Amino acid sequence: MSDVGARSTTGTETVRGPAEEEEVIIGLEVHCQLDTRTKLFCGCSTDYRDDGPNTHVCPICLGLPGTLPRVNRTAVEYAIRVAKALNCEILEESEFSRKNYFYPDLNKGYQITQYDKPLAVGGWLEIESDEGGEKLVRITRVHMEEDPGRLVHKGGTDRPKYTLVDYNRAGIPLIEMVTEPDLRSPKEARRFLNKLRATLEYLGVFDSEKEGSLRVDANVSIQPKGYFSIHGKGMKERGRVEIKNISSYKGAEKALTFEITRQKSMIRRGQKLGTETRHFVEARGVTTASRSKEMEQDYRYFPEPDLRPMQIRSWCDRIVLPELPDARRARFMAQYGCSLNHARTLTGELRLAEFYERVAPVDAALAATWVADTLLGELNYRDMSVATVSPDLFIALLTMLRDRVITDKSGVEVLRNLLDQLKDTGCCETPDECVKRLNLTKAGGAGLSGVIEEVISEHPRAVADFAEGKKEAFNFLIGQVMRKTRGRVDPVELNRALRERLEGV
Ligand code: ADP
Ligand code: MG
Ligand code: ZN
Image 1: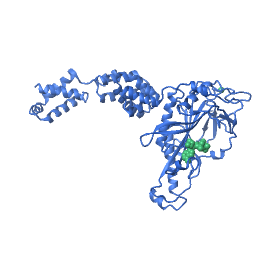
Image 2: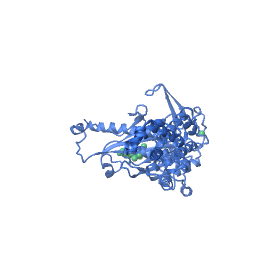
Image 3: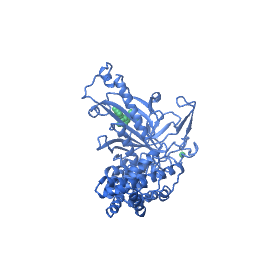
Image 4: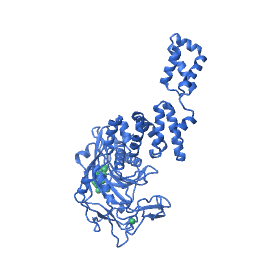
């Protein structure tokens, strides 16, 4: 349908031959809350999520007249760590500016941010590309700013009756990172965000599990293939859409996927795409035209007169970064013999990497499979975090698997039981208790030979067939033992034991 549409279009779009394919262009603006103890310009606690509205405020973050901001040293240090980890050039001098606008989430009438002298420019982050290899996504700039307050609209989402405002969030330190338009698909955007999250967490400056700690504006357009790289930024044939305020990693991928479909169908119908701002409605998975156009205005930026410019180059040189995801991935391959895929998965999240290192001493290869494949799959299925699983518990399970006390199949059953208990009640049995309760101990040793004897006496015909050299008879007997033990025997062990028994007959 779409192909026919494209060729019969008589509107503003020209008919394209196969050589002129289209290309999706994506650039992201990511805001992350820095995980400091206090706010960016005052001493208010940042631990506001469990407390009532407007309980973490003071004259400074409420913007009362006569107060003066003072920069949180830790927040700047965290921002420098981020800029360095993103391979940016840290400017000799950076400065805070006022961005003036009138909106109730901003009690001062302006936001303190950075404008023409940001903290850092010109970096990159490496991600896995759609083609499978690695690719560099260029980082345009990294700057610091304060989070505005939070507005809660009441009485209908489309036309709220009234709006409540909570300034607990006002003044929380944010870091904004802008990418060049280097991403080519929603999946790549998702991978970029995951890598960015991992990097910030390894730096110890960000906690992705805190609600609302990450917000993304996603810019997307569709251009003739190659057009963008030839003509460069700004010379776009078609307008681009900025999707505002996406608040999750999955949300970014979903919003972009929806928006690309929408833009492609407009292009096919010969409609012209203008540059516009849209909002992502997470519940419906769609983007909607937003009225914020009317609000767009001249922000009248000017240098913040209450804060001196920062000269932080020499400080930067003294900051030493911890091991980052790529380095850890390489180490996991070298030290534990992980495959590239396992190492990538295991280092993709700080908590998971730390979990793996705790349990790896049992058996590095066994642990890699059980953490990266089995555990992660079961956690995702239940929408649980690895933080809820104690490494000691997993060590006990792995030890039973390594010592062949239980089969792999039983191991999965135990794990599922324990995770279900954890999810429901927050605690669970030990793997040992679970194995006993479910009667999963492998029928080995004395137990196994007992079952073999039973099977042999029940099937004299098959035993005789085996003696005459019929291979199928052996498999039949194996099957009978398996049935009696409900699969709780180690196949290798059973094979050996049965053969020894029969050949001794
Ligand atoms: P603005 O000043 O309007 O925010 P910028 O040039 O700073 O515009 O770009 C903002 C974001 O939009 C950046 O992440 C950039 O990579 C991205 N971007 C720029 N041009 C395009 C385009 N044609 N398609 C998709 N994204 C784009
Ligand atoms: Mg912008
Ligand atoms: Zn305050």
